[in-house]
Length: 212
Ligand SMILES: [Zn+2]
Figure 1 (tube, rainbow, N blue to C red):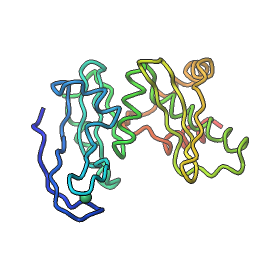
Figure 2 (figure 1 turned 45 degrees about the horizontal axis):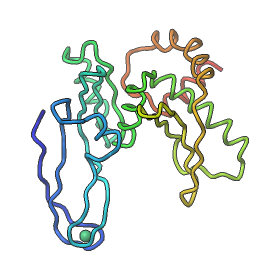
Figure 3 (figure 1 turned 90 degrees about the vertical axis):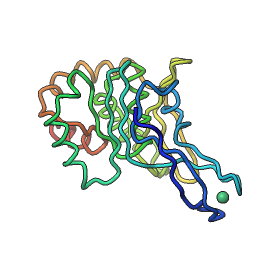
């Protein structure tokens, strides 16, 4: 694992200069790394001057040998093709589930899915369908972001969160039988698609358009 890097930034609230740690390359050498990443604890900081708490966002690579996962966080959409080319040319990721995600929020979601033994691609399709059902059943509810999957190894609970305006969130438990139905229906077809690394809501949209 590359050593964490100390960087200097200005607190957005009190504008004092503060030092924070960033982890540009994360792997299992870091203790409790999976839980620390899923909870977001690795990315949290607190300003020692005014007490403001926030979470850092930056590009990083995440490698988890226990769950066979390699996830690259790339915030700048225009840089993704470069990462795809580099991944296609390298054999370092053989046998791993390789994903490119757009932010740390999405990294946490993918990691939760893998830890819970889910296929993240099926979950993207699940969320796509759940979102359209939710919107037709709750016409007054304004979604502020894409639905978010979360699972807990402690309780075994899995939910899809619908984020509404003003922090009004609605949690709906994952329907196991519906997930399995989608898995049976689409796993083979997804595997036949050209190799890719980005599986997000935009991919689910285009996948759904291709089968309807
Ligand atoms: Zn501050």
